Length: 242
Ligand SMILES: NC(=O)c1ccc[n+]([C@@H]2O[C@H](COP(=O)([O-])OP(=O)(O)OC[C@H]3O[C@@H](n4cnc5c(N)ncnc54)[C@H](O)[C@@H]3O)[C@@H](O)[C@H]2O)c1
Image (tube, rainbow, N blue to C red; front, side, top):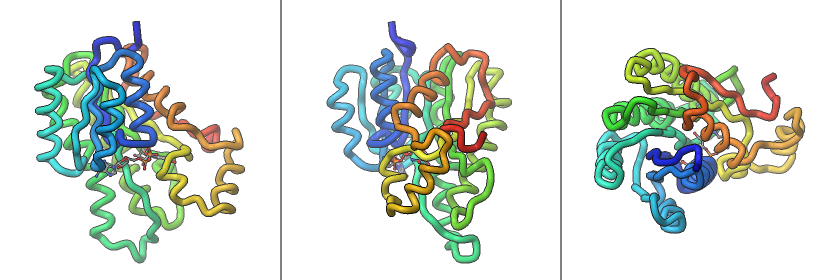
């Protein structure tokens, strides 16, 4: 029997990258999965997975869209056991030039989206539920020209710790994954040869992670194997921040 037998998982940003890998792995481990994304290509993945998989078009920054996801969960599966707040966007702006609207957008997609997700999904969650927030090793320190992305991931990390105290009484766990470089379109988009080679060489393992490796960490946190783990942070970066 799979590690997620009979569980219901909502995964945001599931049309590609880490979210897609999580949806595929969770489904293979027996979960019913609701794949959500702002782009419709997640529908193809849900169709491919077949039984126990549905797609919902979803902008994570929209409260109305979260209500729609809750409706899809209720209609199809009656409850939610696992929520992965995975959707994200990146970009480079220095602090003296970032447009406040761009800063707000990072916060909307990384911080407020997770808050909306918690508020929409917790009422559908049973005891033993698990919420996983995907932050970044950009929330461990500062970097040049990365203030919008980095600060919003720091905020998500903080939300997770505070939420763990408020949700523990309901027996709902909430944890953060902090990936380093992961070979997904988000990272490869910035592929300009020398820069990406230098970043790869700086990793003690001399490579970036794969979406599938990050999905394995999410699987541990989603499953009952992590039943004593809440408010915790998992750095998955090939040893870069060791
Ligand atoms: N790839 C890396 O190197 C890396 C490193 C650290 C953290 N992360 C984080 O991991 C998570 C997954 O990223 P990935 O590497 O799979 O990137 P990705 O770009 O491949 O996938 C991100 C997904 O999020 C979706 N998305 C973006 N905005 C959305 C919105 N408003 N509503 C719903 N969906 C939206 C995109 O359509 C896409 O499918 C992100 O939170 C990212 O910040 C990635």
